[in-house]
Amino acid sequence: MTIQQIDEAVHYIKERCSKYLEDENLIGIVLGSGLGALGNRIEGSIVIPYKEIPHFKVSTVAGHSGNLIVGKLGGKTTIAVQGRFHYYEGYAMDEVTFPIRVMSRLGVKTLFVSNAAGAVNPSFRVGDIMIITDHINLMPNPLVGKNMDEFGVRFPDMTTTYSRRIRKIAHEIASTMQVTLQEGVYVAGTGPSYETPAEYKFYKTIGGDAVGMSTVPEVIVARHCGIEIFGISIITNQSNDLSEDCLNDGQDVIIAAEKATETLSGMVGKIIEAL
Image (cartoon, rainbow, N blue to C red):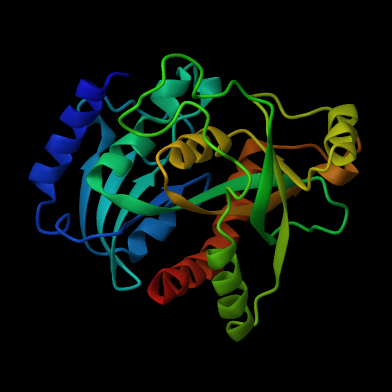
């Protein structure tokens, strides 16, 4: 993707949503598998199907609606992508991360990313909400190639990728809601096949707590753009205890994510309000 293509998408969105995009410090949200219902909480929303936005791709995965939503959440202007693009769908990394570049050019300063993930940590259970403290990337790095100087430096630092400030706020709000949050390291693989038992053991050995097939490319690009990042995984299956009668299933992942959406939606709104 070129800077011209990014700016063409930005121009189209600005024309459709001009009443909202004058605000500073916009909030961006990437809604993952089964979490698209969070978009229903955005007030006064303008909904734009991806197919109408120049150079946007179309998500082919169940649970990913394929809309860009602009409105108010937690009293702040929010831009949400309801359904992400995945590397395993056959998209190149610059296509997977295109919405992040667009949000950066629109003025997003803080990005919330969410996903459905399998538990590697043996203490995690289906339905748990895990705050991402760090990640391990087993996917191609989206910054490979000519650096886009308009967004950031050639070698962006990844030491404090996930905002400690927002993580602290999240724990405080979860406590008032009587919600227990897990914390952990998210491992990103390419998919689309689920991991083998031996791979899960490997992820645990190298320090992973949950595993999925997304999020990290978006986070790396957001970091390159200088955006503050907060990440959440909903634990939708227990990869830590696989047996022949306990297999991973894509529909089960969506169902488990949807059950946790109400809690997560309320919490995210309160976190944004507190920023």
